[in-house]
Image 1 (cartoon, rainbow, N blue to C red):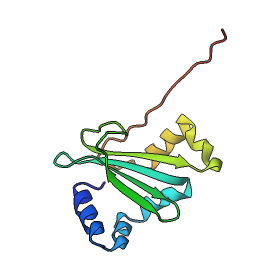
Image 2: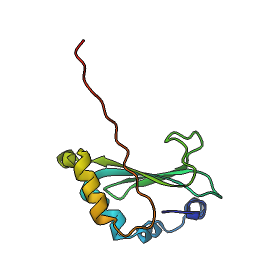
Image 3: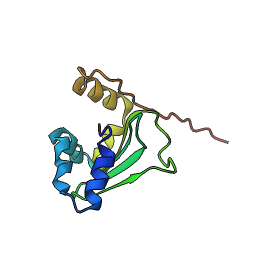
Length: 124
């Protein structure tokens, strides 16, 4: 998503650059706030370092190099983590989430993976 614009963006912000540049990510990106209070984006381009963007629904954001790989190292690409609003718990249902991804991203030429953790309760 952010490719190698991370470094240029950080340099521009360090010298008082225009924060409105973040609006260039488009309406689709901002629509995430219909269901999320906060979004964390971990981005890595093969020729750059790994970065973490954290964006709040109120318009605030932070961006930093992920030197310690706190979000696990990704070799290339983008990992998006949604912090869902309380009333959006239906999106935690695997079937619902996979249906949405299939319907909304049908023509995307890149793989979209949904990681699922499964657990069983055992009485001891």
